[in-house]
Structures are given as structure tokens and as C-alpha cells.
Image 1 (cartoon, rainbow, N blue to C red):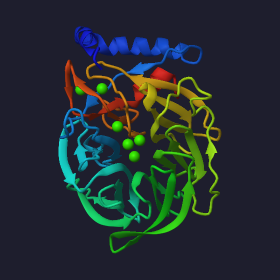
Image 2 (cartoon, rainbow, N blue to C red; image 1 turned 90 degrees about the horizontal axis):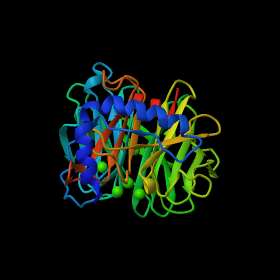
Image 3 (cartoon, rainbow, N blue to C red; image 1 turned 30 degrees about the horizontal axis):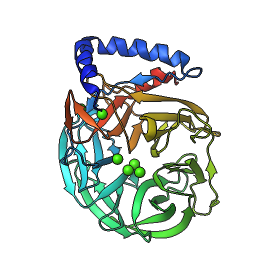
Length: 363
Ligand code: CA
Ligand code: CA
Ligand code: CA
Ligand code: CA
Ligand code: CA
Ligand code: CA
């Protein structure tokens, strides 16, 4: 962080060529990514406004996206600030709304559940609860529609999951001690409540989680052990499987902590599981299919905006979001946000999925 100044000035000089340089660098590195330590790099297309915290605060954490089916370019990025609540941004990174609802940690979304609810849910450390909002499709505002008191000692990580067949909706919450609780959600007259249906235990501190709805899996990031995979259904085994090459001990590209997890879907069963690898400021990409094969890692380096460091939450969406994101988008928290030489409060970066796919030669 301290040595950014010289790079910043070089970057400014190269800004006009950023696009071309980017593509060439990405292509070259992708060719050697499996045989050398060289790691493909991409750059952010957009960064959001900084959060309202102090420069040194660890405040921004996780993000998700509410997709506007009618006007995709008007979709909302919903970021958490774990000091006060939720922030809505547009696709240009401009802050639109803030919701001061407590120390919101992780956030997730499922649209069209319970027939017509665009459901946003998050873990709230102020109230030790899972909080629910409905996105008003016209105003694009979040309206509170319920809350579940967690039985965990102190709620931390969070994700949603939907059974692709039965359409049952689940909320998963965890604690730093490795406990995971699974709630089956119920909707009545537009309000959400839940029934605790399963509890899991991981070996040590956890946070990032993501559910693969179509394949019926729950992935849990154990910060200093790797990524564990469970069956998503409540009657599934309580025994998780550590996925290959998701640990420091068997993959040189992994450096703990494992933080945020997300899934980039590509039709039934296809796509990628992505993990924020906080120890070396990179993102590890695994095949979403049966064996979760490790495919490579990328980093976000300085281009028009600063690169990313110490990323917590990530979110990928495989829908076109206008000309800047023809194949979809990858959103991530940036733990250390510089504007040139000036350190700013944390924010979120947006990357076009097309650049990530090119860098790793993904389909
Ligand atoms: Ca952090
Ligand atoms: Ca999330
Ligand atoms: Ca963490
Ligand atoms: Ca940064
Ligand atoms: Ca976090
Ligand atoms: Ca910046």
C-alpha cells in the first residue's frame, strides 16, 4: 500500500492504452497460468463511491445484485457496511440509498421467490438476526418484511438458497466458532418467518457461504482450512467434503484466509465457484460441476481504478448488464481503496466478466 505512488503515475500515463494493454497481458498470462506462478490480472471497470466510514475502518464487507429484468442497466448493487447497514449503488458506482439498519455483515438475494418476492436478506450483528427486505420493482427501494432471531451466539456469515425443484427457500447463517444454522423460510401475507431445520459444525472460523440452487449444494469457506461442500437440503448429510485444491496445503495459489464465495452460473450445472483468497489478494476459480476442479486464480490490479486488496465479500452474476458487462459482472469489496496517492475509505469494485473469462481462458 505504501509503495503505490510510482505505480499510480505509470498507470495514469498508460491509462489511454489500458484496454489494449489489459487484453494483451491477460492473454499472455492465461497461456502460462497452469504451468507457472504467473497470475492473470484484470482491472476494474467501475469503483463505487467510498463508504461513509473513516479511512482506516474495516467497514465495507459483502455485496449482492438485484437484477432489473426490464432495464438491466438499472440493476442495483447492494453493498454492506458492517458499521451501519446496507448501501444501494447503481452500475456506475454511484451511491443511491443507505439503509441504517444495524451492523449488517453478509447479504444475498433471490428474485421471484414465494411467487413474486425479490428477496434480499442479510446477517445483522446488532440484533443477532437474519433480516429480510423486499425490493420494490418500481421504486427500487428495500422494504423490511421480517426478521429471524438467530440462535447462534453471534451471527456472522450468511447466504440464501432455493431448492430448484420444490422452490423451498433456505437461509444459512454462521458464527465465527464454525456453527452453521439452516432455516426454512415461510411467507405469510408478505412477511417472512423461519423454522430451524438443520445445524452444521465446521472445524474453525467460517464466514463466506454460497448455495448452488440447481445442484443442491452449500459451500462454506473455512477461513484457514479451505472450502467445504455440503448437500443443501435439510435432510442431507451433516458431513461436509473439503474440495480439492481449496487449501494452502495442496494449492500454491491459495493463501488463507478464504473469504467470500460466489457462483457464476452458466446453464444447468455449468459455471464456476469463486473464492476470495484474502492472503494473496486474489480470486480462485473452481469448476461448478461435480469435482469442483481448480481452474486458476486472477487478481484485480490498478488500471483506471486501484486494484483490490484483502477482499471480503464477492458476487458474480451471469446476466448481461448493458454494454460494459455483456457476459455479466463480478463485484468485490476492496479492503484498501486508493485514489491515486490518496487513501480513501473502502469501497466496491466492478469487473466485466468478459475480462475475467479471457484472462483465465474460461468458456
Ligand atoms: Ca475486511
Ligand atoms: Ca453474499
Ligand atoms: Ca472474515
Ligand atoms: Ca484497492
Ligand atoms: Ca466479512
Ligand atoms: Ca479508488
